[in-house]
Image 1 (spheres, rainbow, N blue to C red):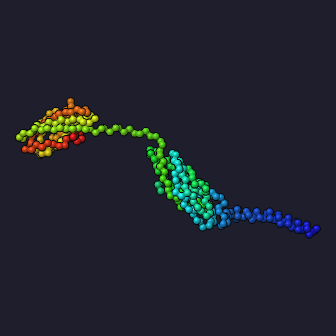
Image 2: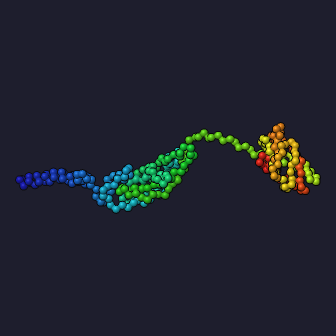
Image 3: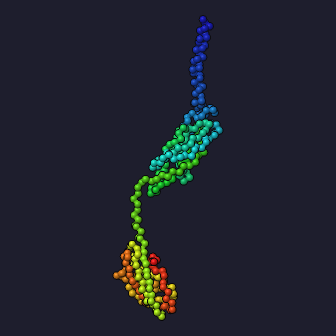
Length: 285
């Protein structure tokens, strides 16, 4: 009987010791030495699946050699609404396990993180930069990386380009309608005698708009041809170039309207007809 009591109390003492010593030993990894943070055992992943994806990124003091995940598949556009882009991508693989996927927008050579998604998520919506004021659209360039449970980052995926349209309505600046081009026809007839000529010209407006302040120009082919006087217009000659300007009472030609003018001139033996004829800088038929 006495021997049984001794065995009982010995067993009870062993249980008490186990109750206090085993938890203490187990907490040694969690707490570590005072003032330090103990690293997880080399065979264990990080204590939390999400810590590598926090900002700023902090690593444990001791990590195994890192093998980055494989690159995610090329992202594809699912839907675009304003500056919200929904996209999907192919999953990465990693021996330590994926902690998260991160989506970046590339602007002028700098990458900006626009979304973080869980380890099993391969489709999500991000918000990208809106087009600048007054710009009709801009192209957002997106790519995806995977982060494993030790914080190793995969190579970036191929990029996806998405056009973001500016839906703000702007009042367009007023632009005057272009003045329709004029259309004209000039007929020329000249009577020639020894040393002189008399020429008549009919100017017709064949277009659909008024010819305001008509001005006829042409050049004589021969250096010996000269205007001496004219009628129904103000005539002038410089070198071989001749100009006739409408008189005050006939300066404008309405569509379908014509005016006949003429001049007397001189020549030195040859009187070829001039061409081309232009009205207000437009070549006439």
